[in-house]
Amino acid sequence: MPKIIVEIMPKADLLDPQGKAVLNALHRQGYGKIQNVRIGKRIEIHLNDAPSAEDLEGAREIADSFLSNGVIEDVVNIHVED
Amino acid sequence: MPKIIVEIMPKADLLDPQGKAVLNALHRQGYGKIQNVRIGKRIEIHLNDAPSAEDLEGAREIADSFLSNGVIEDVVNIHVED
Image (cartoon, rainbow over the protein chains, first blue to last red):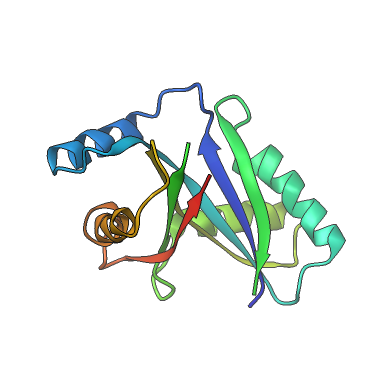
């Protein structure tokens, strides 16, 4: 089933407490080389048919207006997977 | 800064209530062609230097044992971004 994948991350200049907690836990486990961890969302939109240019445009609108919060998040990638 | 990107999704045969809620909302907004929505995680692991094969192996371990819950989630992708 074709999917449109929307990837959303917290903005770079915002704190990400969840990511920070994971970073600290990984440091405690000995993964000292890791500089930072940030946790975002990966959203799959499933379609019956391969998406048209119009579908992709729609997905971009959905990603910006509905799936992400522009105040605190960036849509970092939208792509199609089979 | 080089990043290892870990993508985690709920297992295909599990309900994803958050995705279902988004699907219903999108249908109400007129996006009737969308068959399903599933919401997972996109985790960035930031490193100072380009990851070695060992770092990638470590990331795979972290992804399987710590970042994801194997009972309900699948690690669908691990890749490197600059």
